[in-house]
Length: 145
Image (tube, rainbow, N blue to C red; front, side, top):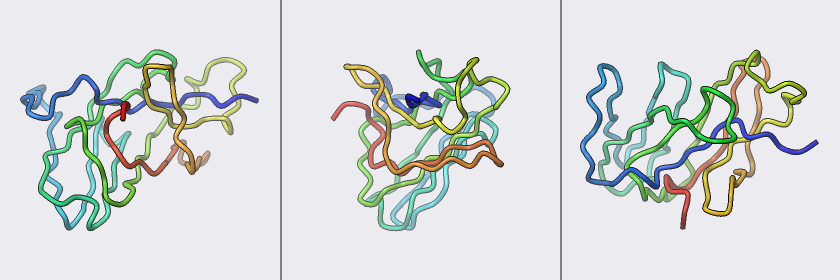
C-alpha cells in the first residue's frame, strides 16, 4: 500500500523577518543552543530541538496550514523559513483516526513536506497508533533546498 500524507511541514511562504501573527494564542517560542520544545495548534504538533541544533536564539512558530493532499487538520507551517538544524529535531503531529480517508490504512501514515515536484515523504519516522501521532526527524524548516 502506498504511503499516505499525514501532514506537511512547509515554510516557503514565511519570511524569516515577517512579523509573528497576533491571533490570540499563536505565539513563537524562543529556542537557542540549549534546545527546547515548540508546541503548536493546542498541543497537536510539537517540535523538539536538541541541544546544539541551533547556533543562535530563534523565535520559532508552528501554525496550522491548509495543505493539499494532507489529512484534514494535519498541515502545519514552520517559521522562520530556512532554519537548518545542526542535529535533527523531532516533529510530532497528532491526527484524528476518524478523519482518515476511506480505505486508508493507519499504518501507511507518514510525514511529508511540500516540494515543487509534489509531496516528499520524510524518512525514519515512527507511528504511534495508540497516541494517534506520527513523529519524524527533520533537519530544516524549508521545503526547498
